Image 1 (cartoon, one colour):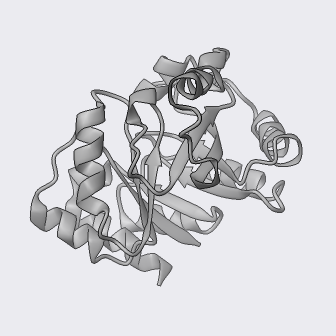
Image 2: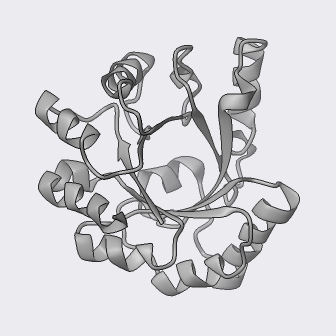
Image 3: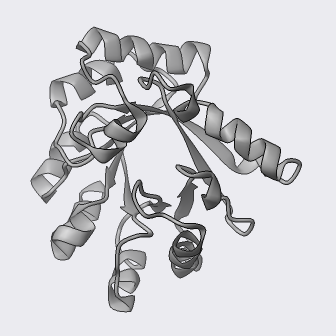
Length: 221
């Protein structure tokens, strides 16, 4: 199991906090957010973490977040959105703007399932969250067997998810990694979800309880 911190460009971190994150036991960082993300704050945030020897991903939730100096990109495909713009639309638009300068070997597509209907990302993408566990598992198999995605991401964004669902979905995947993010507010929560997911992602806790967030990275050691 691995651990990533998700850092929001629109939120404030002090220099000592950035240094502490860089020196933590995490396996890497994802730079990305939903609200108030601009090319400027994304670049500023990314540059603060560029010196790390850990994995560093830029999540392309907005086309303006394409930074020419970034090394690795995550492209979220919100599979349970009825709006194709959040699956392929905005990225085809990005290709029109930036091709042939897109570094395809550095891009990793991620099949997202947004499952907290109250989250801003769910409202933005109009994600269908009224799903049975069999529905979510079917999306997982679609991601692995038809789309050949390297990652299937269960995104609860602000709410701790259903561990039994995470376990059930994990049992359906053989090659695609299962990532989990959302509602992790303690080491206990992190350890709980880490029993089933290949990767846990800790985001909001960084800004709510920084010292506790740092401790979540220690469970992978």
